[in-house]
Length: 95
Image (tube, rainbow, N blue to C red):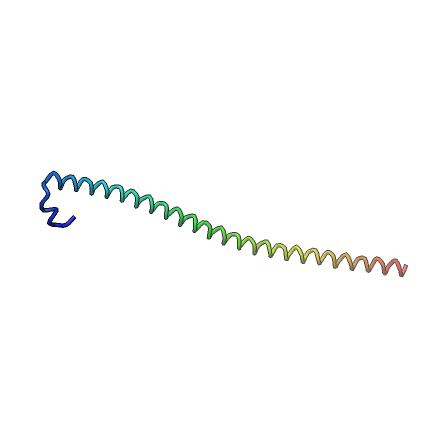
């Protein structure tokens, strides 16, 4: 409303306008609080997703290292088994 229009209004009308503006302000303040809360919740979810992704990557590294160690152990056992078989066969042949 223009300033000239406001000057022409009576006291009761101005009070009604103030009351309506206060109601609107309350509604908008509550809406702002809700939206801020929703935004904070989304940020928490995004941060947690990032943390989960980081943890997953770290776990993958741990599993890769564990798998490499297991593969190395299996290869070592196979190598020892082949050597024992060779020695056994040599003793069998040599008699």
